[in-house]
Image 1 (spheres, helix red, strand yellow):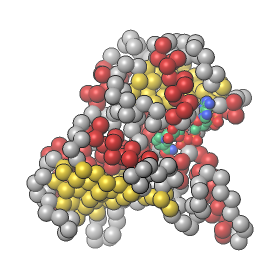
Image 2 (cartoon, rainbow, N blue to C red; image 1 turned 180 degrees about the vertical axis):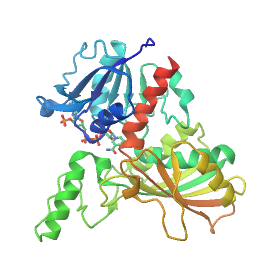
Image 3 (cartoon, rainbow, N blue to C red; image 1 turned 90 degrees about the vertical axis):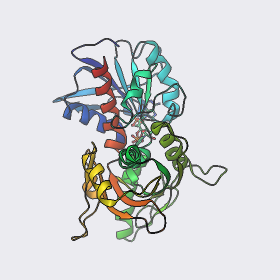
Length: 340
Ligand SMILES: NC(=O)c1ccc[n+]([C@@H]2O[C@H](COP(=O)([O-])OP(=O)(O)OC[C@H]3O[C@@H](n4cnc5c(N)ncnc54)[C@H](OP(=O)(O)O)[C@@H]3O)[C@@H](O)[C@H]2O)c1
């Protein structure tokens, strides 16, 4: 990709929860967009999205070889199956694809990037840069700065994941079910396997042979790839909670050496993309309601882990549609054009 003053950008999955956020963030951060091309499925044909005061039409993605002609950067979030099909066409016409799906994340030749953590990996790309899993991003934003100062031996992480992590329809399902329960009507389950209103359940992804679900395994595998360190022992439990937006996580970390609380505070207060919310006096710690719509991952409840020698416990909340997806992808695009 040649250096230019502005770039032709495509958003695939433009009407989805992540795609809509991408369009907003492109405008918010004044990304140098020359032309914006939006793609969706046949369902979105004839619709449009607002960008810089105008309505940009959404085209139907047809998986044709020349659909991305002239496009420099593709921001993609249409689900893994769709990405697997269209991305090879986009690369052939010279675009760089920043993909939010799980389609290419663990491919050895595809960089998996959180710009605050491993921006140097961007330059290794061969046309695709993968955006990590949202829960992995939110965990690693807090964990990576600590790991750099004092290597981590083990992480235990439990998530409290919002409905919007499963897309726009899932968010509507939480709203409708909540109204129906309060109105005493029977609830409908279309996206989630269980009632999400006034309930919580183990993450709605496939359970693998070892008993972990896909989301839990993604967090482990992707953390190893991003930190370039397979030696860290990680176990995860992923849970869906009746929150509209922003994932929260309880993280137990065991370090090689002691990590005094003051040092952890100091490291985290200087780390980019993080905001410390750790007010014990007023019992004010990270909450999804305060993380929603923001760019920073909120980190707090720092405590010594009483159950292990060099342990630390913390709690985080981050807007998974922004830092866990759309914002992270646009930050990658910003680094990409800087590197040019
Ligand atoms: N939600 C999150 O917090 C989050 C975070 C990180 C990563 N991700 C990943 O990002 C992807 C999208 O997630 P989402 O939450 O935005 O889901 P979503 O709200 O369901 O949106 C998915 C979008 O993909 C589009 N799509 C489906 N089939 C298509 C096709 N054949 N051609 C073109 N577009 C097609 C849909 O378009 P139509 O509306 O036109 O049918 C829809 O707008 C998933 O892979 C997900 O794992 C999501």
